[in-house]
Every structure is written in C-alpha cells, then in structure tokens.
Image 1 (cartoon, one colour):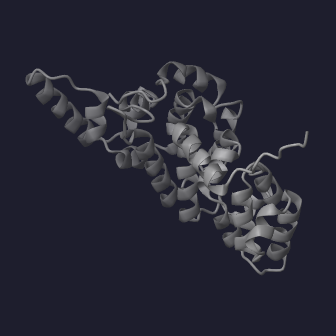
Image 2 (tube, one colour):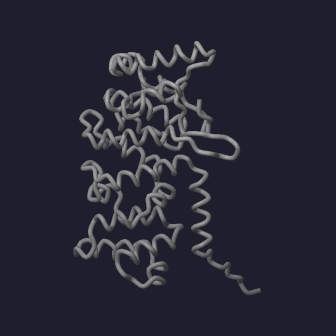
Image 3 (cartoon, one colour):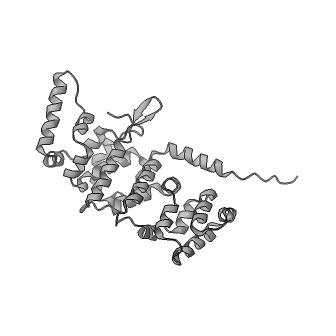
Length: 279
C-alpha cells in the first residue's frame, strides 16, 4: 500500500495556532510587550548589537524552527530572497544568508532586530531567559530618567485591568504590588504630603463606612510618584513577586536582577494566582 503523505500545515493554520497560544500565556504577552517597549526606547543597555551577541540569527531562527512561515518572512524581508525559496530554506541557509547581508552592510542591525516580532520571540523563544536578561541589564543602581519611565510603564502594565470572561483581572493586584515594597522604604521615601493625602482619603472612607484598600492607596500614590521617590533597586521585590504570579518567568536567574534568596523568600507569600482579580 502506498504511503500517504500528510499535507503540510498552511501558514494561516500556524499563525492561528500561535495567536491562540499567545492569548493563553500571560508570561509571553508580558515579555512581548516589554520587548516592544525596549525596541522603541533605544536604551544603551539594550542595543541591537548586544542582543545579536547574546542571541544571534541562528539562535533566533532555531527558536522558530516550527514556524517556517515566520522564518521565511524574516529571511525575505532582510535578504530579498523569493518568498517560496525563503520559506523552504533550512535554518542554516537562512541564517548564513541573513548574516551575509548584515556583514556587508546591506541591512542595518536595527533592521535585523525589527524583522523579529516581539510576539514571536516571546512565544517561541525562552521566555524566562528574555525576562531575566532584562532584569540583568536594567541599571537598577543608576537609572536614567528614561529608565525610570520604562519602570513606570512596567508597573502600569502589571496593574492594568483586563476583561476576561465575566470578570476584570490584572497580572498583579495593587495589594501584591504594595506589599512587595518594604514598609520602611515606603515611609522613608514617599513624601509626607502624599502620605498625608492618603491618610485623609482613608479617614474620609472610614467616616463613610467604607473600607480603604491598596487599590485606593495606589490611586493616590501614582506609579509615577512611586518610581520618582523610591530607588528602583528597592522595587525589585515587585519583580520577585511577579515571578511567583507568573511561574514561567521564574527560574534560578533571580540573582541576575539583583534579588537574593532572602528576597525570594520574603515575597513568596505575595504571589497572586494567575489571573487573580484586582483588589
């Protein structure tokens, strides 16, 4: 009996499957958003050259070994190879051709980096490694104004509410974010006038017979003020806690971002279940 060759999956099927997988992975969604932000902000500690040194063309295309559609698109965009030939080529041929046009200067490192979608890298690449590379490179001890702005974006992303089914959720709740910041650091660095404002709101709420929560506190103390007044190195506990909320970001690389074992133990109890509703 003759062998029946199974039809190859179409590009549309591959893309739809990847989109579905991305929609189910909060880790990949967060890292994809982070990579996109980093690509737009042009930080000196996150350059195309340093990223190529860390994860070169062959490495990236190997991550995408099961996505011939994406590899073909990247190869065609960077080298001009005909679409079908670009799609059907091996990882080795694609990588060598792309590296050739890079070395000759026909395309820039910026073009090379832009050819790889943050969503594809976060979904098919080592999500945890990408995350911890960010933690390792971020200048925690001497951040520039632009670096603090990026940290504000990240905190807002963790707190951003999304509709999932019939409920509203966020990656981290205000309670977990606030609890991950040392109480003494909070009291010493958040300005008195802001703390007075918070206390006034708390009193008004209680006089109305209502509770005052961390959601209410962070509504008064905006993330911009937190990052402005608290040194980023004192906010790393939030990222430690995040890795308990999103286990796929975890691993043994905590020390890369400056966190120690004790910090990990302190934040372990702060982890919200994935998809936990905001409080």
